[in-house]
Amino acid sequence: MPLALFLLHFHDYSNGLDSPFIVPVAGCLMVLGIVIAGMWSGARKRQIESEERLAAIARGVPVPPTVEELAMMHGKPSLDATRRRANIRLAGIILVAASIGLALFFVILWAVIGERNILCGVAVALIPFGIGAGLLFDTHIQTREMEEATHSNNSITPTH
Image (cartoon, rainbow, N blue to C red):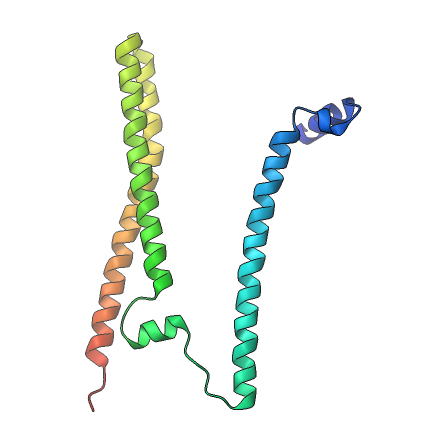
């Protein structure tokens, strides 16, 4: 129904570019285009890497190890796993900090205005706090798993 109302309202203008909805629609389409282009680029990169490896196998050339294989051979987490863990940790820290700031905003607003119902807004801060705490807990679990994998790989290394 909202799409139909949008199209009717959009059609009311003689030139579609005069619509007040052109900026939000263009912004959404731009973000969608960026996401699709990023996904296509990643898939194309993996396809090219796969074709290069298959060509090397067909020629009988030894296939060089991937970055992940090199990291596993040396008993270290891959750069992707380390970067992903760091990004998750950063997102968790940002969400926890944002929730604290949001709670402080509502407390200060309550102190200034004196309206007790404003304190209900502090409960809104629990949403980003819970998500951020979950992300930080996930980072902790990933760190422990990586350390366990590193210790188990180091203990299995063959001696010559």
